[in-house]
Length: 177
Ligand SMILES: [Zn+2]
Ligand SMILES: [Zn+2]
Image 1 (spheres, protein in one colour):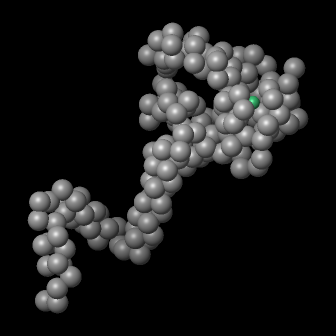
Image 2 (tube, rainbow, N blue to C red):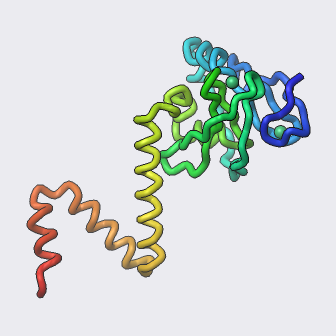
Image 3 (cartoon, rainbow, N blue to C red):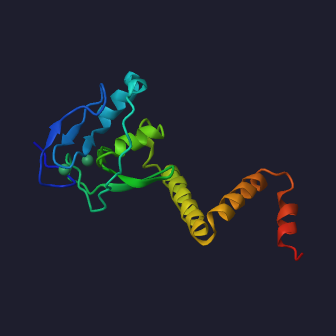
């Protein structure tokens, strides 16, 4: 019996996360521990096509340091990206992943549950940081502008992004009237 890496007060019990995806669950905080080899064999089995849709409930992301239940290494906080505002804890040594309560259903909602093994790569982390930065910037503008101005500005921005004369239009906007 291993102790839960997050709440540390309860032990982990074997419980599958999906059909054919073996995992351990904490009965106290409802987090899941998924070993890299179990995750890999689930991906290879093709059973991920059969996942069920679960309701999306708020994630309570544990921000404290989490140690791997298998090899006791300090786990890395992996930025999920894709506008999902939580981190996965991944073991740098055995590549196992700790999922806080409800994180799995949020990953499924974005079809990211089949890409957990790629998230610790530096390319993924770079993209995730960029996307987080962009959403912070968007949020800052959304707070400054009225909601109708903001949605109008978003509309123009989208139109401008793909416009072949983007530079000319930007100069036009910047030029004094
Ligand atoms: Zn727990
Ligand atoms: Zn480990």
